[in-house]
Length: 117
Image 1 (cartoon, rainbow, N blue to C red):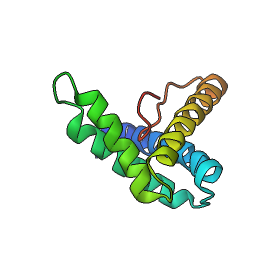
Image 2: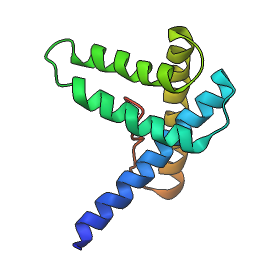
Image 3: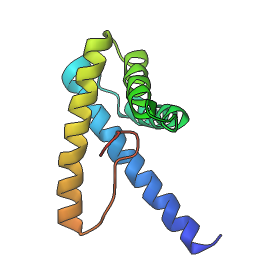
């Protein structure tokens, strides 16, 4: 197994766990759901949904955001409004987590499964 693959795999797993933690924070705050594993799976599904439709010219990012919020709605209780608030809280949480982690450890990781983070 080549070393670059291992590094990429580790980076992916860390980014997925960060994205999952941001969704976990939003799920705890908005939907009162305490399940980190569910949040990590939601991050993965949301990222896949985003990837499938974001390539569409002109409207791709808007459709992708609706799909991502739809994944949150599907995975957690509440309607579209609650899912949109969850998405906003997850995005803010991801930015805060990434700021702290990247400053504290001097790394440049992202949050897989949270658009724009």
